[in-house]
Image 1: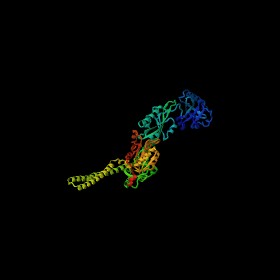
Image 2: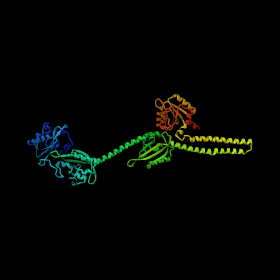
Image 3: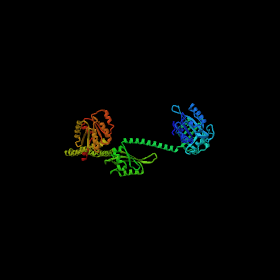
Image 4: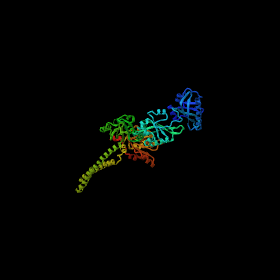
Length: 611
């Protein structure tokens, strides 16, 4: 049978324990609930099916009078419970009788809707419930049996929060004795060990005199820390006055420690996920190629910059060794040995190496490789950074060439010119000492002429060397663009394109010129032919996608060939804004002329090869 009214946790515990008689009726006394103990021991199972059965009909005349008086007192003050003693129920007679605590059941508006009877059979003639007189005894033998459960810690404390009872489980758990528990202030066990906020909550629950449940940590006599789940149920005397608490405790140290450990792991995972998300975001926008390997040096992750730099996509790289992927025919065997040694020895590596793109093109790379460790200092894999140092290597080569040129200039100035100059000086001195003879003068003048020719040639050679040494060929722009295979004209004005073609052909007849009036087509051509050496001239103002759009997209491609802006715009803002693009070498205004074209110092790659 289901209890018909609102069921609080205290009553639920009593019903489940089945240690007391629990009966309920409506306002008219009709029986509408009895627990298993009532059904079996009071023999109510056979009569409870009658819907109009009244509890009073089961009582004798004397008990009826007492019961009616009790009901009347309850209705006079519905907040107070009343006690009634009944000698018999139905055909059952009890030697010392049954003692029931009767209370009114109210609805949400506090209007009475029924009665609740909670009782037990008396073992001796008593007018009132037993007061707890001894520290080691409980008022009810049935409750004492229940509290013998070794897994449950049970205290009974009085209204002053002094411990009146502690079961054997408490002495065993806390390594204490009755003298250390009974008669002592209960909260002292928790005052100095519990988390302050938890202790204050515990103290407030006891002061509120209401049922509660909380987790709190304590310490045994042996200073072992434990966590308890404590349920507190208020105790009331026969007149309904607060007497203290029954406290049920369960050791949840293992559960709490596991939950705490799981919480820390969850927090750590959350932090790692956030940091990894930050790393991926930063790595994805980095111009540096970044790769991560596992403990056996197999690539497990890489950013988009690796694809832009080396041409390999993720599916090409996953599971491969770094030296298998990037090293080629001309890669130094010593450098490859360094990489393999760093893997075996789990050490750092920082080298400049000649590696290979997927296309087979050689590329100088700054190769940085660092081992990765977790928070427990356990090796997890390698972190690899690839930096393009092609410009640096080209610059180093050019500097070496310039040094040779400067040495050549020094030789021309100090030897060849000086030799011929001293010869001329010697001849002029000799002429002064010679007698006037036309044949001698003619011979000397012929020698002077030869020397001046040689000086003139040396000056021209010196000028060429100076031009080379003082030019900006040390920059990638000049080095790459002096020898080109094609020129791209990107402009939506077809007439301008035709005129520009004529100017270019007049200066560079053997260089191919490609014209695009749409930036998307131009970008597609560049992407399809990444290895072609080219000079790009682009207009800024287009009806749809502008020249600025082209520059932004070209920047993403990562091509080494420089771009010339050829525009009619003279706005200073455009000139300043163009400076943010490192690959722009010149800002020219229309119309293009031969002088402007010569400023670019373009040299045909095919002409150079023929030479």
